[in-house]
Image (tube, rainbow, N blue to C red; front, side):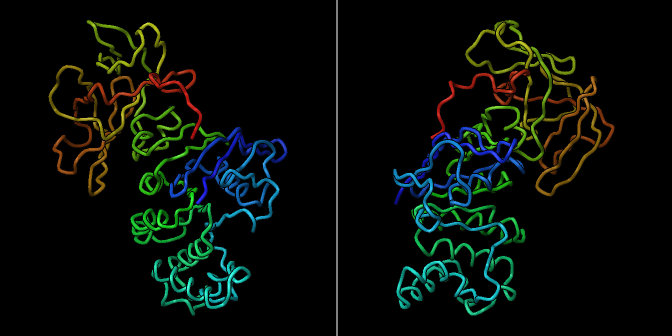
Length: 368
């Protein structure tokens, strides 16, 4: 199989830039999730690779061969769309076989349709028309059509968005092994960070047409490159406060709502920090009724039970509001109660307030 390479790819529609200097390598058998908010350019990126749009700058290579200008059928690319895009007048079997009939004999087509449908557990609906299929069956039929030609590159445009929650959860478990079995280089577009973290080997975070971080899921969650990336991962979202770190008794500290808290210091002098954003994820907060070193006084504004945890809305004395995610049986009080909030120094993230970039980030390398 072949690797997919994007080299400084750019695209604009009039004055609107949809892709800016995109560089990325996807190895055979690797799943890279392209994740970002709506309008960030994810679908445009897939369509440039598929041949629906041509980039204005840069190059796209499959197996070391440029595919710029090549017709879609000669690119070695398979694609499954968000809206399934099945032919309404064809059965599921004919939809799956449609991209293969011009390349293979009838017996081979039937054999490969049966094989891929068994793999995706849709062999019992091959004779059904699209209107007779559930959304989950339509999604699997579209995926089978994309996989049947053994493409070198597989593009999946938010394929689970229109299926129900139960099937979405099941497919998150099944898809990674299924996709790796194909040995294709996979680009998987999604707006769901949980889906990206569950399915992908690496995540490419796309914001306003730029790749702002490419890394393994656990690294992006623990060490986001910027405030913007940190806000995209986690539910509830990361807590932020404006701080100016300083050295105190040999440690790096910051003041949050009038309380001096200790931080884990990256390799730089405290005087070099300046104005920062302090970020702490709700899961990293502890809430107690008793005070202690580094405990920030707060008032519980509201408690939202969420089955596996309870989310507390906390308000500090200076009006800042943070969220804490705690076990549902944590007896910390009720609304309007006074409590104390703590977090471990290693749980704190610091971001430059002007640029939004995380402090302590290693020198930026080309995405690969």
